[in-house]
Amino acid sequence: MFTIRVSDEIKTACPVFTGAAVYAGVSNRKYDEQLWREIDAFSEELLSSTQMEDIKKQPVIAATRESYKRCGKDPGRYRPSAEALRRRILRGIPLYQIDTLVDLINLVSLRTGYSIGGFDANKIQGTDLQLGIGRAGEPFEAIGRGALNIEGLPVYRDAAGGIGTPTSDHERTKIDMDTHHILAIINGYGGQGGLEEAACMIQDLLRKYAGSDGGEIFFFK
Image (cartoon, rainbow, N blue to C red; front, top):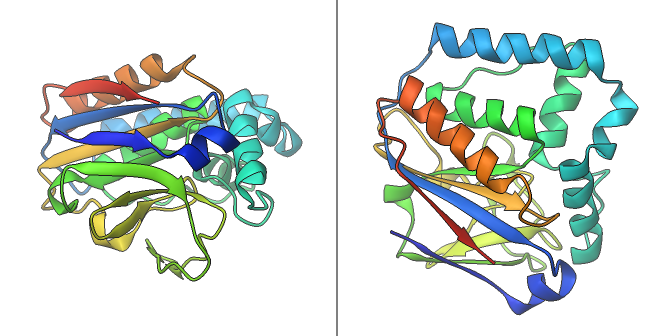
């Protein structure tokens, strides 16, 4: 089990921040047809009910964007992942299919507006994580996009360095087909409301699609 601490710099910039995490044993698959029916159904619902200008006003996304500003990052240039996913759908670009674990985390992110970090728990160095703010020149190899300037971004660090931001997670701890334990972190920059529902949604999808008992939820702030 992991301990997640919130640094004083985050508490100062985002005093209402609360996080939730799901730790679970899992079995990954490359593709699940039924999961993609759920993703496609939500995508159609989003297209029929949402305009592009509405995305950044969604309360959870708006709170994450505000946290970026307070930490020193422009959310218009470095978008939170949940916002980027919704914008992708509204632009008519198909959602990328990665693997079942990543796909189900993306579905929860789409539904709730939370930017969710999904990590292979066995690749995390040590059992203590801390949420802080990225520093100038701090190295970070973002999944699928190379070097990412994380200065001013909220960042989770393990014993070896940064592993996740609300914009992108790090290649070093990414989920793959050999992942057997997952740590999913939900970032509540607007406070605790809605976190438990999002965590339970992850658990439900893990039970349905990842051969899991759902694992356990813990909160931190």
